[in-house]
Amino acid sequence: MNAWNRNRITSILGIDYPIIQGPFGGYASQRLTAAVSNFGGLGSFGALNLTPQAITEVISEIRSLTSRPFAMNLWVSQEDEGARTSDANAFERSLAPLVAHFGALGVPLPMYKAYSPATRFEDQVRAVIDSNVPALSFIFGIPPKEILDECRARNIVTIGAATTPEEAVLLQEAGVNAIVASGFEAGGHRGSFLRAAEDSLTGTFSLVPQIVDAVDVPVIAAGGVADARGVIAALALGAEAVQMGTVFLTCAESGASRLHRETLLQRNADRTQLTKGFTGRLARGIHNRLMEELNRKETGILPYPLQRALIKNLSVAAESEGRSDLLPMWAGQSANLSSCTDVTAFLTSLVEDVSEAAGPIIEWSATRRKHHSV
Ligand SMILES: Cc1cc2nc3c(=O)[nH]c(=O)nc-3n(C[C@H](O)[C@H](O)[C@H](O)COP(=O)(O)O)c2cc1C
Picture 1 (cartoon, rainbow, N blue to C red):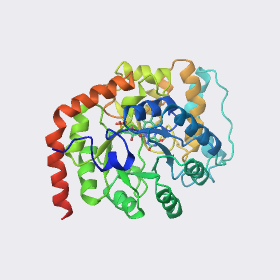
Picture 2 (cartoon, helix red, strand yellow; picture 1 turned 45 degrees about the horizontal axis):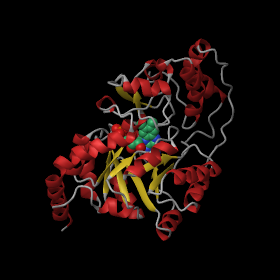
Picture 3 (cartoon, rainbow, N blue to C red; picture 1 turned 135 degrees about the horizontal axis):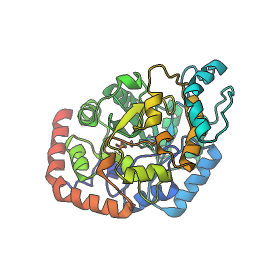
Picture 4 (tube, protein in one colour; picture 1 turned 135 degrees about the vertical axis):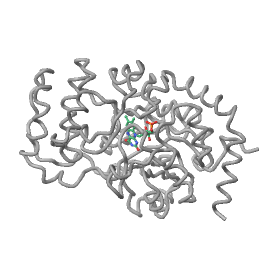
């Protein structure tokens, strides 16, 4: 009988369980990455905001905490059309609905500054590759061919993210080793890169089997997986691993803020919604007053990453003033399903529960996959 935890993903990555901790851009922590990897899953670190120098330091810190494989994660595309030409008028329009909140939080109003990119994928990925990391995962596109070739030559496993079967096919053609099928339920940004994110909103239950049918490389299910039921369902749909994000935000090792963590632990995340208002790109977070206001049709939203920078001014103050109504708090639709506070305890019980039921399902699902490929 097939063991549920022995498949192409576990063997490509050299891990014990096909459980990937989803990378958190801006909320990552070396301790969380290492804790998941030490357990035998794949810890990931979202490095989207980091300079190459900081990336190198983070990688060596992770290596000091674990000798097991881990992934570094980057955003291939880091700015939207219009970011370079966005002017002071656009800035004032987007600032207008926030002025009262800045006042209430006692924060001086931010001033318009012409955009200049803080980080570039090309420089960040150089630092990741030069450190010979075990795995590189990415969203919002496909890295240039030379980068993927170099990863292959250095045995760095590459994991791309797709929000549609078409994106998955392109990722496979580019030669990635595995594909994350990222369903509508997922917390954080929609990493769409072919169609607009608004037109790429398929749920995990529909997306995973369609991507499994469309590609031969192993598929990782992401979006809404929060417990053993989700893992088993993902495996039954043909995925060979899961990527869980939101569930790890509440554990002691996560980099999420106190307010964000408390809101999740108090199970106040029953209503999540997609918004462009927090960063300029479509992403799922907990519905609150700020999201409601920014989602109004008439609100001006700056192109990514300008909106992100604008809101950052507000969120730092909202956090210190304890204003969860004004704080962006990313979370997926299954946020209220779990309250993981200790990574090892959570993963131990997850693995026990999945092990009880998964064997026959995996065997059946693997047979289905074989039938498809003949
Ligand atoms: C706070 C937060 C930040 C995230 N940042 C990234 C990121 O930088 N890169 C990425 O590939 N995925 C990112 N994700 C997506 C997760 O890695 C994962 O795919 C997703 O959370 C899975 O869905 P779930 O939240 O329902 O578990 C983020 C998710 C959250 C909740």
